[in-house]
Image (cartoon, rainbow, N blue to C red; front, side):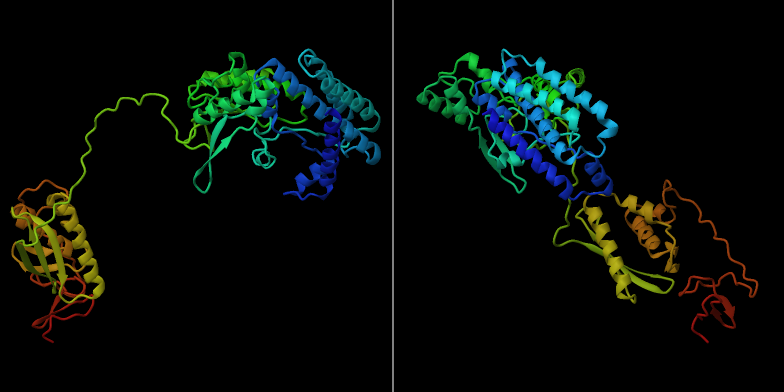
Length: 511
């Protein structure tokens, strides 16, 4: 119904024109540009389903001729309506400085109609398109145009389903049976409702249609269905290869369809060029080059399977299309915790470092090697006790998972921090810190006597201990046998028969 189509275009262009002045825009610059040029975006959806219902293959000369003639009528009538509005309200504000180039664009649109194959396109639609462009050009030369652009092809991914379309925008059918992943989880099955109309249009009986549709519902493809003639299979070709079939629309078929309608679109076409999973880099490059050669303003390519998750697929669960590559055996070693028996031997050792007392308890495996460590500080607060207990737990877990004791001895021996001092243990007479004493004692007890004097990170070997340089204080002589202060670690000086720390004032307790 050509006249009804024209009336729908008139109404939609007028409605969009009214919205321009009443719409809100994200920025002032966009608002100013929209009002200066007043671009509109009329388009359509369900083209793929229309071609199928008429018994035309999407990738065919007849399908492209029909799509081109409909699009030519859409855009020509839209510009004619825009010129009529300009006759009443004036052209868009920036029309005057662009008048010459704008009319040249309209002329090129009009001449492109003559390139449509009149033998394949419906005569009534094609003649209406020529008439609309002719009238639009003639009226526009006198009155100008109210809108700089009037048509685009939108994806209609959401509104297409609201309008009960089987296909979106200019797209062909994605698959006769498709599964859509929902954002909140789950999958819905979407069945094409145009197939029965197409089969009836192609001359199949109701009973044959029922059997063919049942086959499609069961297998997801029309290939192998009863009664279907081979020459009719291209009508039902889809973008994706069916899970149980081999036929699909070649990616150049998508590009050629876009090229057929681009001369009658003010803006660009939002469409996905679906390419099979096995497409190469050269295939993608050639698709872009061919799109440019045919005059497309925009092109978007999607290779099937290139994303881990895609919203639409041809099967409820993805199936492997090729045999999995041979796997090379690789042995992965994982640490296993070796727990101590419920009843085990242990060693408890009391120590004192500069007056700070504590206890070490080492739990032993049956072979006498250490497997757990407990550290108890006799007179320290809850914070220090908690830290030491947590540290001992971490060391215990490491020992049970196989970390050699030698690594801890090398790492923590000779770590220096307070408290430090004399220990009273002739094997470890002086400790630079609690950690230094603990791990040097563990090394001495379980690894050998050489670890009592080993510097961290060096190869264990016996060597004499270097005397530490003594700090000379100008205000008092230091006796060679002066002890270390239990509070701050500084060397004490003799005060009569006792010793006093000049750093913090602590005395040895006799005065």
